[in-house]
Length: 634
Picture 1 (cartoon, one colour):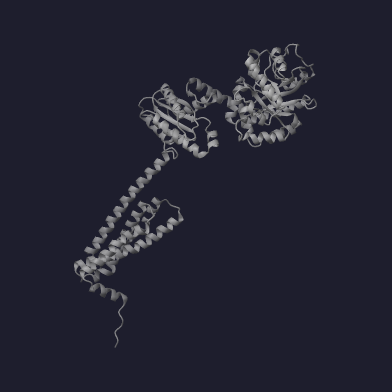
Picture 2: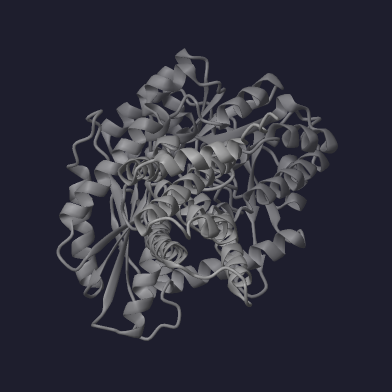
C-alpha cells in the first residue's frame, strides 16, 4: 500500500525540525533584519515622519498578528522544542507577520499618496488606523484564547511579543506627538510670517500689541511705511524685480531698527515698525527708515522712496489694533500732501479725519437726494467778449455743513468712491441747463471735468454718450477736461477711454496746464484739442519776464500743433491784454463773469458782449477764490 504524499505544511515542519539551532537562529535573524527595513526601502521618497511611523506600524501590526498566530497554532507545536528553538520560531513568526504587514501598509500608503488629498503628516496619522485595529484585535483575541481551562497560556514567547506590541505602540505615539508638535509649530510660523520677506506679518504684530496691552512696559509707537509709486515700479520692471525690491527693503529695515524694535510686512508695499517710545521717537525712527530705503541698493539701480505715518498707542486702549489704523491715517494724509514725507497722528489729524467722515456721509446723502447744484462759467472770446461756451462746475450747500468747497469734497468723493456719482450728476444737470438756455442752437461748447478715477472706470465713455443723447447735445459740442497727470504713463487704464471719447467726436482738453508735470514734449502725442493754461501761470506772467517767456513758449508750441489755448483765472484787463498779445484767443475768469446758476444763463446770453476796455462785469466779485469755482474732479 502506497503512503499518502506529505503536505507542504508537513514538509515545512519537517524541514524546520531538521534545522540545527544555529541554522534556525540564522534564518530567523535574517528574516527579522529584513522585515522592518523593507518599509524604508518601499517608501524611499516619503517624508521622514511618514517612513518612521510606517516602519513602526509594520512592526507593531506584525507583532500583534504574531501573538494571535502563536497562541492559536504555534504554541502547542513549540511545547516540545528547546527554549532557544522556540524563541527563534517566535522571532521567525514575527518576521513573517511584519513582512506581510509591510506589504499591506505600503500598498495603502501608495494609494493615499496617489490621491494627493492629505499632507504627509496627516497620512502618517491616518496610517495608524490599521495599526490600532490590529492591536485591539490581538488584545481581544489573546484574552479570548487564554481565558478558561484548557485554553492557551501566556508563555515567554507570547509574553515577549505582547511586550513588543506595547513598547512599539508607545514609541509610535511619542514619535507622532513630536511630529504633531512640529507641524503645529510650522503652521504657526506660516500664519505669523510673510512668505516673501520672512518678516513677521500683521497678525504677529497684533498679537504682540495685545501682549503689550495686558502687560504694559512704557509707551509703544508704530511707524507705517509705504513705498511710493510701487505700482508703477512693478509695471515697468516686472513682478520679479518688485519682489526683489521688497526683500531688499525688508533687509535694510531690519538692519536699521535698534534693539527692541520689530519690523513687519503687512502686505503689498507697506511695512510696519514697532518699538518703545513716544510719537517723537517714532518720527526719528521713521526718518531713519526712509533714508535707509532711499539708499538701498537695488538690482536695477533705480532708487525707491517711501512715506511714513507715525502713531503712538493709547495706554489702556481696548483695541490694540487701533494704533495701526491711526498710523495708516497718518500715512494717507502724508501721501496726499507729497511723497517721501513723515506724518504724525495728532489732534489736528483726528479732527481732519472726523471732518472727512462727516463730509463723506453728508455727500452720500446729498447725491442720493440729488441735492447738488451746477454752475456754468462762461468761456469767452477775449477780443470781443462774446461767450463761446461754458465750463460745468459743481456747487454744494449742506443744511448742517453750510457751503462746502469742491476743493474739500471732491477729494473726499474720490476716496469714498462717490466721484462717479458726482461727475454724472454735474454732467446731467449741466447739459440740461445748456440745452434750456439755447446753447445747442447757438453752437456753444460745454466742458466738463473728469476725474482720473472716472476715466479708469469701464463704461465712462458710454455714460457720457448716454447723457449727451438724453439731453440732446451733439457730441462735437462737448469737451472733457482732464489733468495732465493722466498722460504720464502710456499704459494708463484711462488712455483707452480717452481714445474712445475722441473717436465719438468729443473734444479733449488738458486742464490746469502749467502745474504739476507740465511738459511741452508730450503735447505732440496727446489726443487733445485744447490746452487750458492754469491761473497761476497767467498771474506769474504779468509779474515776471521769465514766466511770460514760458507762457509765450506754451502758446507758440500749442498753436504750431493746432491746439487751441484757453487762459484761466483772468481777473484784470492787463492779464487779458497780455495773453491776447501772446496769441491766446479764449479766456475765462472773473473779468467777464462768475459761474452762473442755470436760471441766469438766458440773461447772460441776452446781454451784449463785454469787450476789453469796458471794465469787469459788475455782477462778478473781484476774487477768484470762490469755493464754488473748483472743478468737479481733478
